[in-house]
Image (spheres, rainbow, N blue to C red):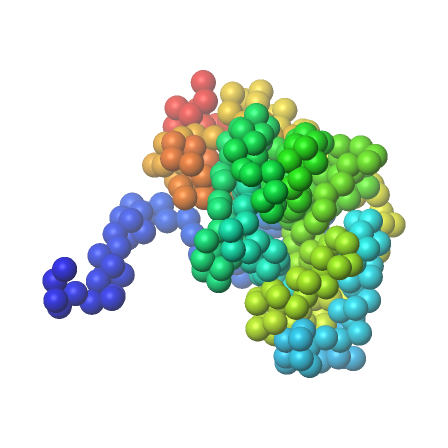
Length: 403
């Protein structure tokens, strides 16, 4: 190694983003000046937002705004401490009781972000010489929770099984000693592909091989199931997971996250999750917004039904145009392209015509599976959806992505 090498050399030598910027195709960190329901203002122009995780359209709901402002008036803008010390308000306890009732568990625990929920809960649960099984398409926060556990406990056995492939999961489980501690971690709805885990089969295998089941519902609660309660409801009565995790930054229109399950497990996580213990707690405004979101979800079931109708319309529409949408069954509809440059070109075409979507490349997806990730809201109008489809058809044909 060059004795004069600097820790910062990699920064000055990083060229990928610079190259894309020079081509005028750089799509990331675009500032949004204002949100107006299904639309946003950017660079002085109005865009249809077709790349948000605000699935139920609640982030701009006036009832949510009023609940948040009232919480600020009564509790201030910050808890100014961690949950362990001075950062637990009665609001946190009330929300945790509501969440546990909503997902049908004994207890729940709220974190400041969904990312921290996975980071803290997984690292608290998986210890030295224990085994964790993770779908290869699981969210990065799940993998980071595993990495944190590895960093803390050193020897963690990590098994990555092929996406939603139950034969591969069983093969991995069968190779581990029967008396070893095991945890299967999976998304309910996969954030890029929009498909749903085969949870009944996961549960069958977990029971056979004495493993716990940890279910990440970030993109499932509010999205699937008759009343929006997620993957367990989607698969029908009796379908459960040992632990249910979710973020509040998607369907709930706020920020934060929770882990829910048996009271003893949640109490253990409460005392060993480093991101909970060493971070300031979820602010009052965000707690109040989630509480109001729960009210709305429970009182307005048609909102979930409309979201599911929107998802079916867009899947059918993109398929009819000739796009590869993978195995999605949700309002997350990937347009799988494969070629990185064409992915950026299609993103740019959407952007130029007033539609905001998300280009996704490796490492967020496997190599050769670059895609445009579209995602839709219950509040999108049919006219807005048809506009997105028309642009996708015209621009996709120009680029040779579809026939």
